[in-house]
Image (tube, rainbow, N blue to C red):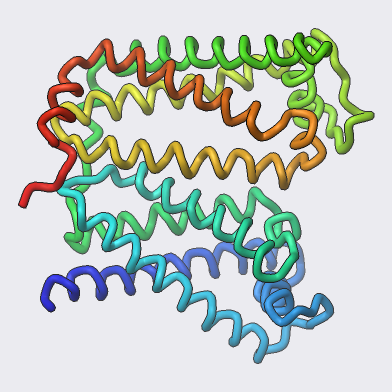
Length: 319
């Protein structure tokens, strides 16, 4: 019973805090747009199957109750998951939770209401709000003693992390770019993928006819491509170094990959839905898998101690 209280109470409080963070965030977003309480009114209307509801006190109050109850359940679930680990990375696990929340909003809203709530609210706003909530919730759970946080300061002080991260990020970015080039060439349209993504980012393309397949668009997108993979490589290198002494960090890394994979596909569906057909979800998934295997393979060779840790069941929480 005492063990349950250590999870239920902090989890519920973390959920209330997370719900409050999201509520305040969207209140600020709505105020900036000159339409206070637009978000709860819109989502509340979607839940009721109506899109013409005004932001009445009753509707806002009803949605607020549902909103906070949902986050309480999420908080309890997060507390239980973290309680299974001796240590867990603070921001990393917070990002995992944030991505999970984002995916829940995206896929859940479509399944329950049939309305793309993320597109209505703006994917940036939804993502930022949920990432903030996830990080704050996990930080609170660490403070509440559900699990101990990982100390990254010592890890980042070591220059090997940056060096290994740069190599892993550049290598994975190069192989992913090569994969897309091979697929595009086989389909008779070399450089289509980077040109398509570049056209969306720099030219504001909203349909296939607006995509400009050219070397300059590809060249413009290339720095963005590596700017994504290099930080991932550095983060992975830090995780690998820390996991040698604190194996549960690996669980957070794996969860982050799964959440990010779903988030990336969802993001394309929101920002550039017209690309999902031409790019194909399996093409994107394989590209991301290549990146993960490249980074993991390189860091596995650089950190042979990880094999010993896994072989000795070091990831499990000590009794």
